[in-house]
Image (cartoon, rainbow, N blue to C red; front, side):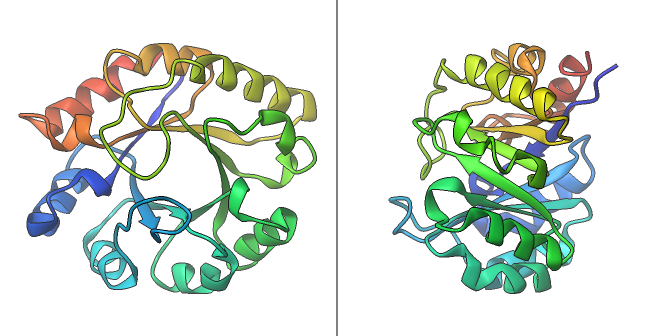
Length: 220
């Protein structure tokens, strides 16, 4: 039986009631907190920085999955470790020396993730897949929540899964963007291990129930 991990995206939370939303995730069936850090340079949006992350990790009782959508992520690796990140994901497109960046993340005791934008080919990871703990496939263009899902994602997951198996890697696959009850099962069947859900969870009438339903439906 496959136990898919559900990672609500804090970007979609109510920032005026952040502690309430963090407590909701703590008491839900969710597995991780997914936290997007955006700099307004790598992506056309600015989310939140270190003080807000520090406030989140103070209350969060689950794995902290930090997704850096920033240029030059190497500068901040130690900072994010100190702020409580368990998994640190950098964008392939933002790293000139990806292998070195992955080693630096692991040296701080975090799991190392690599995110790919929708246009970036899976094959580019072939030489480093054994050094990556998690690949985050962007199923929308990064920068804003609430975008519609890119259908090509399914075949991209299958291709990535084939690469992982070919190389005998233990890398897991995370999907970020446009995840709902309409595509969750198909994503897991294609090979996804972690589903990030933002608006679908936090804008729901009953977020706790929505998380539980996603969890149940993807336990295949």
